[in-house]
Image 1 (tube, one colour):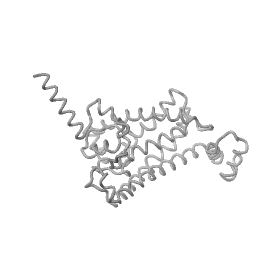
Image 2 (tube, rainbow, N blue to C red; image 1 turned 90 degrees about the vertical axis):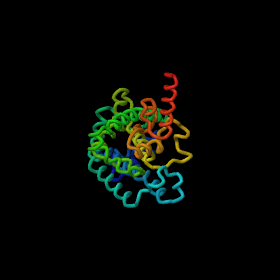
Image 3 (cartoon, rainbow, N blue to C red; image 1 turned 45 degrees about the horizontal axis):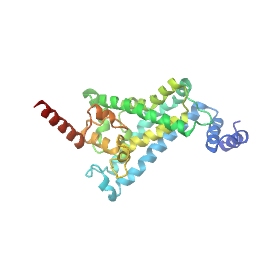
Image 4 (cartoon, helix red, strand yellow; image 1 turned 180 degrees about the vertical axis):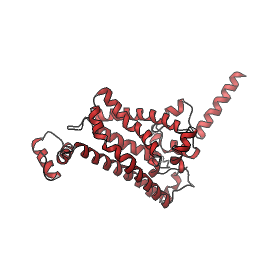
Length: 291
């Protein structure tokens, strides 16, 4: 049912698929118009990634330029300069086009191999929400162990040190890293839904797209360098957030998890004043028991 134009394909799809909602018809028309699923998925995936990454980073660039927000800045004496922002943006873009773009073109064949659905209708919002929650937990575990490994001497010196160029992070720096690190840590984001699909045989690519959007938001916000009274971890104590990750950049150790705090808490790798206070209190309590 492909037409010469995208909207021609949309009209044709709409004519024979009235049971589909508007967004589902837009989706189906895109694949019908492109007539090449690999190309259709590749263009959509890369465009989505760039729009979300730089679109979500832009508000933080604006916040950094407004003095009013300094009181919420975690490391108040370290404001990124315009030069640092441009340099970071250039290197992130270079990484996107040289490292991530080739991988994205392999995305559709990988989806087909593992059985991800790319058609319509879409799954229910409840199913997608549940699956995205599972992906957050899976990715957080991968990120904790891989990130902690990256702080081992040789790996830190040769790979992870690039990401720690900024001891006071800012939004754009979320994916400012070595190509090897981008691939290793990014594997957790991609492989979590792929593994889920391989086991359950039930996953739509739209769910994966939404998961990646949420994951990008989480990573950029964690690198923002700002702690607000309305920050999510004030309402969900186990959520990591900017306060958790900013300390990692400031001290170069501890707080290795991406989204949640439980791995660092239970494995005693938390960093920051509160964690240090808990350790001192635990040692004093232990000393009293011994005496």
